[in-house]
Amino acid sequence: MCGIVGYIGVQQAYPILIKGLHRLEYRGYDSAGVSMINEEGTLSVFKEKGKVAALEASVEGKDISGTIGIAHTRWATHGEPNAKNAHPHYSQSKNLSLVHNGIIENYKTLRTKLEEKGFEFQSDTDTEVLVQLIEYQEEKDNCDLYTAVQRSLKIVEGAYAIAVLDKRNPDVLIAARKSSPLIIGVGQNNHENNGQAEFFLGSDATPIIEYTNQVVYLKDEEIAYMDRDGHLRITNLANVEQTPDMQTLQMNLDELEKGGFPHFMLKEIYEQPNALRNCIRGRLSIEEKDIKLSGIIDYREKFLSARRIIICACGTSWHSALIGKYFIEEAAQIPVEVEYASEFRYRNPVITANDIVIAVSQSGETADTLAAIQLAKEKGAFIYGICNVIGSSIARATDTGTYLHVGPEIGVASTKAFTGQVTALFMLGLAIAKEKRTLSDDMFHMLIDELLMIPDKMQWTLEHNKDVEKFSQIFTYAKNFIYLGRGYNYPVALEGALKLKEISYIHAEGYPAAEMKHGPIALIDEEMPVVVIAPKKGMYDKVVSNIQEIKSRKGKIISVVTEGDTTVRDMSDYCFEIPDTRDCYVPLLAAIPLQLMSYYVAVAKGRNVDQPRNLAKSVTVE
Image 1 (cartoon, rainbow, N blue to C red):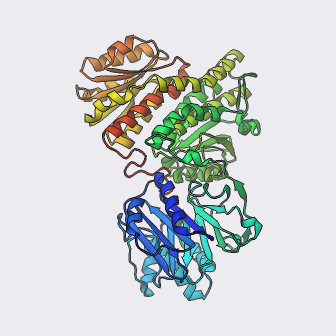
Image 2 (cartoon, one colour):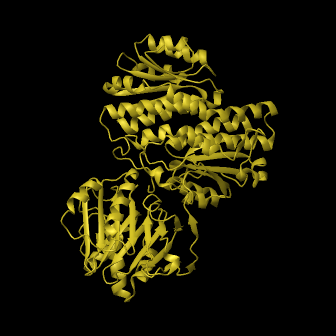
Image 3 (cartoon, rainbow, N blue to C red):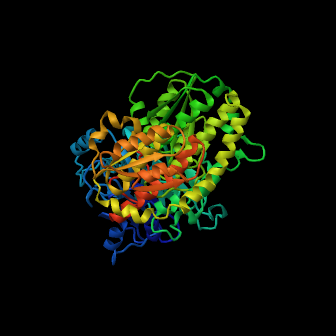
């Protein structure tokens, strides 16, 4: 949630900042703003409620010149969404402007103290307290901006990623972070020392990749000083110098464009076959019928001696974790618990050094999951991370892990990251089973062979369900949906319901199919669409019985069936087909038509599919 962009260099800052804000729109926001220092030394702030386009319209005809600036998209926490509360915020003297992601938890106490010292506030935000505090530290201690930021951040409690401008020093940009991501892009010419030095800031890599692939990921409680001469200085809050860890971005600019699709979500649904090939590549061998995960190979004894595995995740990642639980328990014979990270972090869970905690997060920045990791670390557990963003906070906080390699996911509603996470958990289960020898050779080889075929079967699923757009429009009338599945397909029902809720705003619930008669069946009438995942695997006959119960009460059946199945097809009002596969791998195929249906229902209802209301791509605050 929220987004920061910053620039200092020789180019005009405004076009870079605005383009960067557009790249960050997928994160979710309700207002936007920019701040620049022009050649005359004027520090300007422009901000508007609503989309970045509204900000662009508001600055037409105004002086937006300058080669240093910061920008922000805000997702409201303290203070309602309006221009007053939008970022950037001025200090009282208007010498400073600041943008901030995160939450300052002790802002009320600090605001009261600053008001007692004569500071007047123009907004309802916690962020304005921070910029006023920095100015107060400058005046009180007669220190430079860098020192004032450092001293202020020792006082505040909470999470932050910030960027600060000072009109009295237009050649310097200051940034810092704690528990909220911030990346520094180092200009391609900086190393040549030819006067063309420039630096870029971003909440993630998307605003940066167009200009440089050389980045530094700021770590918790680090402060960065950047200037026009190409100096990059990083210290921690104790003023100890840190060596910048330069990394090369593994991202292609084309991945950030829609590529002819009307929305990123639809593009990412159709990217899934190739995304899974990339996830599998180098890990599964068709020739050797083997699997190699360095995180398992390097820490073999940890997994062999593990008493249990705990998977912590939120949202869609929690659904993928539930599928992973079923598979790891079945294949590797290790007890697995799945926890909502947002609940786990506030309990006092019984964790020992013989436990393995797996953290699953697309962004690698989910605040609750990061807090769960810290709690598990303090109790001595071994931590394994599964995330998509290289260099993310979870990747750095864990002992080892697996990257998804499915490419950037821009749509807020997760699609290819979900199937990537499920695939990564399948590979993890296979790798553990290999070390523990809990599967016969025949079964192990068969599972590998079948997993290698899933991308092609995904492609078949996409090509053979093209009528979903037409019949999805029928269900725009619905106020509620029920999704049903059993075994491995119960989490798919949960995920399908979540997708519909997220982007169409239709209430939907997922249930184990057998639970229908324990309450939800009371909701069934001719107005209730019921989505049933009914492959000819697992408890097929029992799912057929569940469908009959619904039909007898005039419910509308939308089914996902194995190719060629006529029994459930004949009972259904609408039907999707998927290729035959192992029971455990059905979720990877069944998810696709449910994603497509959610997408087309939302489009038919005129929803903003890529940026649904009130949602952020990455929840980086509580």
